[in-house]
Amino acid sequence: MVELRTLTERDILTLRGPRNPVDPSRPYLWFTERERTADGRIEKVAAIFLTNKECPFRCVYCDLWKNTTKDRVPPGAVAGQVEWALAQLPGTLHVKLYNSGNFFDDQAISRSDRSRLCEMLSDFRTVIVECHPKLVDRRCVEFAGGLAAALQVGMGLETVDPQVLPRLNKRMTLDDFSRAAEFMLAHGIAVRAFIMLRTPYQGEDEGVEWAQRSIDFAFSIGVECCSVVPARAGNGVMERLQEQGHFHPPSLRSMEKVLDYGVGLRRGRVFMDLWDLERSYTCGVCGPARGERLAAINLSQTVPPRISCACGS
Ligand code: SF4
Ligand SMILES: [Zn+2]
Image: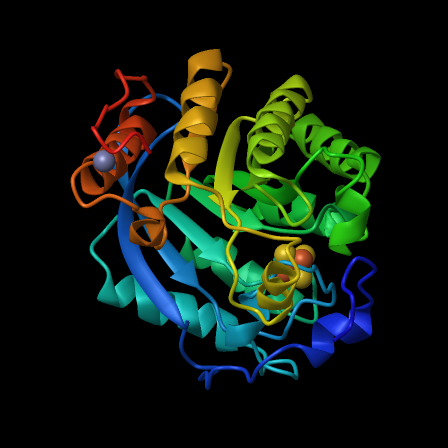
């Protein structure tokens, strides 16, 4: 078995399973969720997960390629997906357009689609997209300029741990992240950071420590919102890293520590991604209640007392 302390792009690709079948005329997922806004209201947000060409990066932990296409989708397809999804969803003032990659990558979303989106989204107050820091450039400013809504761009910071960030194959330094954030802030574009909790090569306590330091770093450079994502297996490489003892998903306790810390700073919004949270429950008595507490913190941005249980987990 290949020892994965030194992962190559080839290892990452070799260990992948098949893609899911996707339809370029439809997003692969769409729903509304409630989120606390930057100005302190709890409002519905439409989340649309677009089908488009796979991201050119190959981050170790990424499983987003599963719902992408190998080739570019036809011009107009992405705008058409958004139009279709918005017709299915109840009206909202905020929309997330997550495209499993980089919104400003012309290979994923053409310039003409982005222009059409600006027209289509004229009734929204906030538009949130995602992009790798190295692909944040004039295209981002052009898009923001064409929107009536305020633009927020989410970028993966992942971790400020200097031992780990270079090993994630993200091809990004903290300077790259800071530069992209500074560029956007100078153009009035808000920044959201995605932070990974317990990356590969981190122990449980280290995972908590580095996620907290990553939140500190993000706020120190003007990020408005931190979204903490518990690392998970599911892309082939992560399972292999787990078998070899280089990765383990974080515990519910670690999620509590990081969310309580981040929200307690009161420097901006901090959310914990609760996708598949049930998998981290180790006790049938306190697990669901602790999950509800995390969901309540996401919405209230206040920290209630922790839930204690005889299980001690
Ligand atoms: S930049 Fe984002 S979408 Fe691309 S491989 Fe990395 S995590 Fe996945
Ligand atoms: Zn318990």
